[in-house]
Structure formats: structure tokens, C-alpha cells
Length: 381
Ligand SMILES: NC(=O)c1ccc[n+]([C@@H]2O[C@H](COP(=O)([O-])OP(=O)(O)OC[C@H]3O[C@@H](n4cnc5c(N)ncnc54)[C@H](O)[C@@H]3O)[C@@H](O)[C@H]2O)c1
Image (tube, rainbow, N blue to C red; front, side):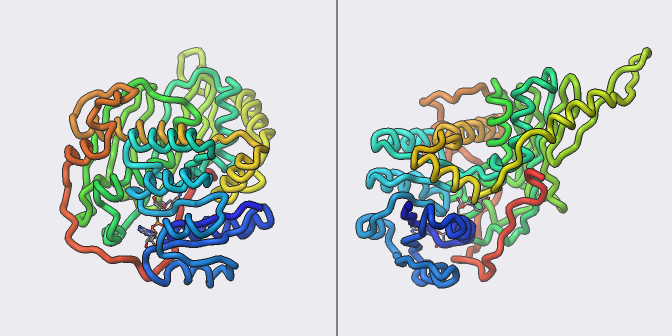
């Protein structure tokens, strides 16, 4: 049985704890840490955990015998905490976004390698039947050439979302909707289609006055992907739509197949429709989904039963793509991947100096009274 520590006892920590509790006896939550007095204890009591509460991460690492930690902290703390845990020979699973620069991601990957430990980054949407099937169908070649994709990472967050002290800041959250929300769909995109060669992007803030960062991003990634990430969307329609030689295939699931009539205009192609639908439906379903499935995969990887598919390199690729989108949005020019180690957008300090402040943050709260959060509407349906 693996002993887990949780660092950061806020909203997402609940999701981790609930998943780990349901995975008993493969694992057990032995320690919870939050620097705000009482928060760790509250979670321990809420889940009736046989665990110790800490206000200092260092103390937790020194005094508990932990096999793994879940890092559920504000993003600026991800890299340092991960490296500290790895230096204690503890395996790490860190919430998204992995870190606030490619340089910091590289530091984490290096630390995991040096200590011979597993490093995983949360990307719970990979662990959903619909996305697994989409990836498998693309890999099978059954759709023919992929021409174009549309990715809508559309969310609704009220202005007061940014009242939480660490959100809406370039130096603590590290970004706005692109880094904190778009990260989910960009991870899926990279996983399914691989890396684009270059991109052009626009970033702006239309409606969140207590945030320095963007709340709307539009981009074209070359391979031909139209990307929109937004926090302004009533209904939160989130989708990945692939247009290919043989069909349109989208998640949430939608399939359309046309063929050309003698004059070039479209008519339905029921044979191809049936062929792709039956292939889609024949692909395996995930037994578990989301955080629970990813934590189970992580445990299996730590115990040598599975190859980790959500490692530091995967987390790093998403951060590199996000930093390239910021670069294009700020400099108003086409940006090519990969980002060079001398690039201002490769490093945290140099990028933070360059990013425009759409607004200044004027007020903040230490935490919200409500712990309930939502993790997207139709992601992976
Ligand atoms: N995967 C997802 O769908 C998803 C959803 C929400 C949040 N997240 C990510 O999870 C992370 C945390 O987000 P959240 O919404 O839970 O935030 P939160 O503010 O609710 O929780 C963070 C906790 O960390 C604690 N903390 C801050 N500094 C600390 C320190 N130095 N030592 C110990 N504890 C400290 C805070 O007191 C707080 O309780 C972020 O990276 C966020 O992007 C992921």
C-alpha cells in the first residue's frame, strides 16, 4: 500500500482525496498539509482520514514516511514543492499547470530523473472514454488525412473568481484562461495530434477587472487548428472537432460523413458513417474516469505495472505551447516551436516582466466560503 501526502488542502485536494479513498487498499492518505491553520484538519475530518495534519510542507516531508505526494497548490509553488519531494525520494503527481515556465518544467524533469522517481502531471481528461477513443481512431488512420480541427475550451467564470488571492496574477497563477483552463484542451490536442510547427495568437481581457491576465485567447496553430479559450461563455460548450478526409468526428460525440454528388455538392455517406461509428463503439470504455483513473494509473506506474503516459515531458510540452501562444499574443507575430532556452518566454522571470497587465488586482480574499467547484461541462462526453 502506498502512503500519500496531500499538499494544499483547497478545492482540488478534495477531488484527489475522494479518489484516493476510493482506491484503498492500493493507497492511503497519511498526511495533509496546508499553511492556513485548520484547513488540513478540516479535510481530514471531512473524509474521516487516519492522517496527520501539517502547516509546513518541509515538516511533513521530514517526519512522515511518504511514498507519493499530490501537489494541489497555487501554480507558482508547483516546481519548488515537487523538487523538494523528489529530493526526499517521494514520487510526485502535480496538478496542472505543471509549472510557470518551460525552464521550471525542465528542472522538475531533471529532479525526477536524478532521484529515480515518477513525476506525473494531472491531465484527467485523457482518462475519459470519448478522448481515449478519439485518440485511438486518429492513430488507426480510419478517418483518413486530418485536414483541420477546432478546439473550443469555453468556460464561464464570474468576475469574483479572481478575488482569490493567487488568481489573476502573472507571478503566482502565471496566466489567465489559457494557462489554467485551456491547458486541459491543449494537453488533449498535443496527445491526439502532436505538436504544431508554428502559431499566431491574440490575447485580451474583456470582462475580468480584478485580473492582470487574459480571459480570451484566439489562435491558429499550424497544423490547421482554430483554438478559442475563454472564460466568458454561458453554457461552457467545450469541444474538439476534427475535420478529416472521411468524416467530421467531434467530442462531445458527433459524427458526420458526406460525399460529393456529380456536381460536387454534398450528400450523406451512410456506409462510411456506419463504418466509423462501429469502430468508435468497438473501442474499450474506461472503467474509471478523471482524477480517479489518473491516480490509479499513477499508482500502477509507481509500482511498475504500467508505463506512465502523463509524465513530466507531456506536462512540459503543454507549457511550451502555452508560452509560445503568449509570445505570439504579446509580440503580435508568428511563433515557431520549439522555444529556445535563451528565449524570454522560456524563463519565468523574463516572461513575467514582459506580460501586459490588462488590469491591476485591487482586492483579494484568502479563501472562498464555498468549496464546491466544477471541472467543465461536456469535457469527454
Ligand atoms: N485538474 C483540474 O481540473 C483542476 C481544477 C481546479 C484547480 N486545479 C489546480 O489545482 C491547484 C490548486 O487549485 P485550487 O482551486 O485547489 O486552489 P485553492 O486555493 O482552493 O487551494 C490551494 C491551497 O493551497 C494552500 N497553500 C497555499 N500556499 C501554501 C503553502 N506555501 N504551503 C501549504 N499550503 C499552501 C492554500 O491555503 C489553499 O488551501 C492549481 O494549480 C489549479 O490550477 C486543477
